[in-house]
Structure formats: structure tokens, C-alpha cells
Image (cartoon, rainbow, N blue to C red; front, side, top):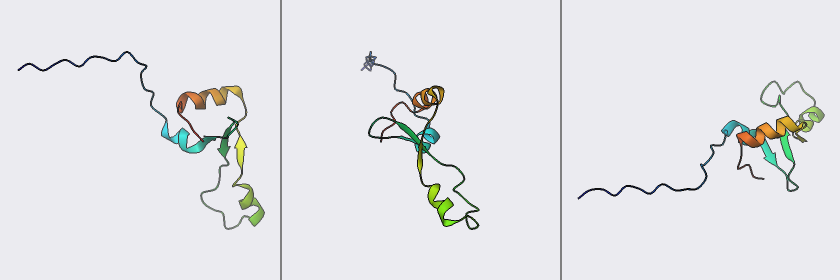
Length: 79
């Protein structure tokens, strides 16, 4: 018995998300793109408590080109 050929869908192609980008950036409720600060992984013992606290803040992404690039890399980015 011959196999039936699958009918090709006419929908859009699914885009792959760049995983590193999706882990580093997020969207706020109002739709702003925010990022975390760098330099949090090690050598934190000598930093003051105030400095370490400030590293937890999320910063809005500046620049239209950067926002455009992140949206292209992570098209399905959610809150």
C-alpha cells in the first residue's frame, strides 16, 4: 500500500528564538524592553551592600537599533 504524501501547510515559517537573548531580556507590562545589569556573577565579596543591591535593577534598553535587534532574535519574547 503506497504512503500518502503530506500536504504542505501554507502558513508562516516558525522562527527560532535565540535562547541567550530570551534569557537576558524581558518585556514589561507596558511593552518596554528591559535588561539586567552585568558584572553580577563573581568577585562580589569586596563590593558594598549598596552596590550589590543596585545590580538587581532592571534597565530599559536604549536605542532603536538595539531594540530592533533583540526583537528579531527573540520574536516571541514575553513578560
